[in-house]
Image 1 (cartoon, chains in turn brown, red):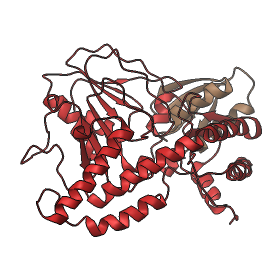
Image 2 (cartoon, rainbow over the protein chains, first blue to last red):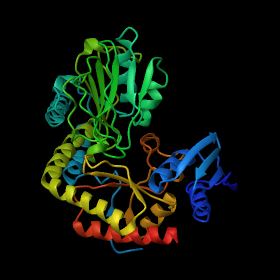
Image 3 (cartoon, one colour):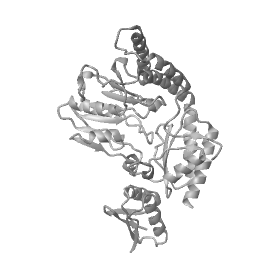
Image 4 (tube, rainbow over the protein chains, first blue to last red):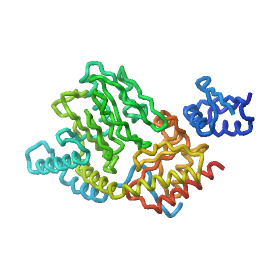
Length: 67
Length: 352
């Protein structure tokens, strides 16, 4: 499973990092993202809505994304 | 730096007519309007004229109005004053309320946030006569207009601090305006209490006055002139403002792309909030400034607390890459074209 570590990075970097990772994965693959930026969860949900990706919050700073 | 300078922030210079009145009012505004001397009576007369103008333009009775030296204090006075007059009210507020409202309601038991949808819309709750609803007429970030609360039978605090152009609902109890929202001088709020029997002063107080006093009469007199000019300018330019709003929406969608427009189509046309995917708003604001364009942003990187806009987050909108545009009546079409050209170039550079 691809993991993107964006801990310590501020917006919009976590979303840019996960978008890059997703673009190089086959459709349907599951990725995880670690981020402690307070904007990540609201932005990840908005990004999922805009790009048609499914996103989930696993823990406060850990998220799951289906490419 | 570019040759064009465009101000698209929420602030604007004082209207020339209001500035002239302000300078004159400083000379006349030194007396205590409550005293009986000629200078006091003259000032009292000027303040009453201003109050009548405010009342007419804001759609309330002059006797209900009080001037407030700090507009943000009005949120506390309104909510806590209504709350004190009710035995144990439930307090409802949309999650997109102003930060000042969130700070005040946070200390009240029985406070419930009303969830909003992608357009910032929410349902008016079923309340009893002993409940309290906090309602903003217009959201200060997106321009979204709140639903009509006529079915709500409890008391309503109307936060009208974002715009004087949207009248309070018919069943308002207490309302608050901020002079800055009509490009009047800062440092003046206007609090209206419809029924003083339904409001209990939450601050230590010596007499019947509902506000602590301490406002600057010159600001109040100048602000009334600014409001009058603001409303007239708005009416004269309303169609152009709506057209500019639609032009911007089309351009950022078709020519720039990957943008999340937070302001619903039904929002007030002077307000526009949108977010560009994969763009750092701090850099965007700075690049636009260097090109001569002043814009606002609700993104975390542009806030002192490094927190994203709670309004955008509550709506489920993208919080990074956010741009907030205010379409002042004085803005010309050529400025819109120049703004859009600069936005496209900056966003492309930042995404590169």
